[in-house]
Image 1 (cartoon, one colour):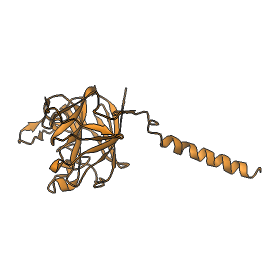
Image 2 (cartoon, rainbow, N blue to C red):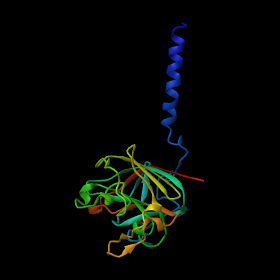
Image 3 (cartoon, rainbow, N blue to C red):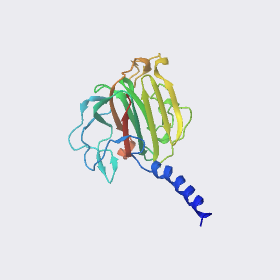
Image 4 (cartoon, helix red, strand yellow):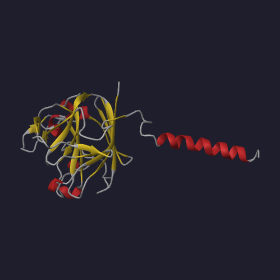
Length: 231
């Protein structure tokens, strides 16, 4: 009997961290979409100018814990709340022609990719001529990720940490962005060829959002989206 107790106790101790890790709330992040239905505290805006609301009937909605993009291609689901320093985590799944992205510290006007920050998420087949900074984990058209770890047509986990000028991005458990925004002083070209502000001059507080720009209106799926503000 005595010889079996240490082994049993050791097994119990090993099990405790695993159980904690399996708890979605264990990291202190609060769910962004806790209930099924049209998310409250969020608004759907045009992809290239978030000051413009989209026509009625194009809501994003949550079903069985999965957020799904609306019927209209070319939208942002933007938070009404503003965030400065935070940790944002979620899982995302796209089709072969999928294109999405995450708005960070964006104003509720203009294009989040150029007037705030956009952490890109896209299947490489969406644009086979895309530059590295236009692929998954790129800070759109500004900073390429260190490597590509995106898994096509599968669920991909993303974690973004923003504190002051420091941004750290992790995709599928690998850190692929770890930069100081204040060191990027060159303008970024918008889609029309004009200059957008360099990263060092982008806002330090703003809205977050999720983009739907997939071809053929193929859906963007998001689950387990959570956030924690940093003080």
